[in-house]
Image 1 (tube, rainbow, N blue to C red):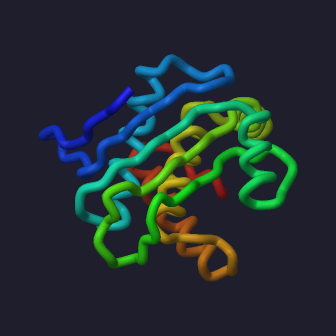
Image 2 (spheres, rainbow, N blue to C red):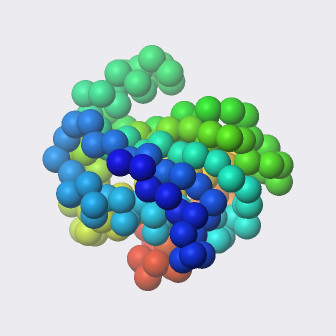
Length: 166
């Protein structure tokens, strides 16, 4: 379901395609609202401008485990994976397509329950996290992790979502 954030609501210039492929997720309209808000907040915090497209896929542990094994050599499910369509350097122009963010239903639900947080808040956080990867951020070093988490915290605060790292 394509979601166009080019309306006059101040959203970022990103066309978002949402696909629910597998797993037990909230309704697609609700997911679209969560994704729109997450993308708006992440773009507001990063200051990135330009036009682009983004795909967000809601799937399950089996699918993400296959992707994780194939692309990262880790034969286990994870909560979110990001697949950039084009290289993006922070501060550079947006590529025509940012890439794909894939979330796994069972892992997302399990983590939300273990952390005693609403699953919608966790989905929002993971979409922001995945988008930041597509925007050139990473957490391979402590400094990178601190910088990325600071952006995540600020974006979530814009949405009145508590700090997931507290």
